[in-house]
Image (cartoon, rainbow, N blue to C red; front, top):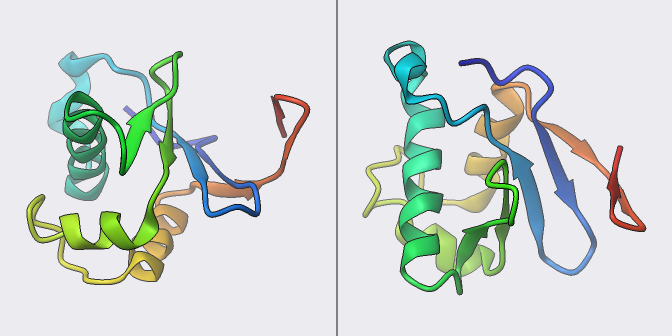
Length: 107
């Protein structure tokens, strides 16, 4: 599983979208801990109602709906960070890229 081509999209109203690698769990042994923790956190938050963060319909993109509330979840999911900016830096480190959202198209 690779994060090549992963994208973060911030649309100017506090939402961020990020593509997560394919959901083929047979490859999870090769996944970096940060990427797996991010996947597990979004999966759990989606199952808890999705008010903080949730998967989009395609299951490859997630939406962060409340950055400050997401920060409060980092300890719960055993992230080694306390601030959203640190989380964003880690996403960038794993080749997530900022992009724009325009008329439903990601580019």
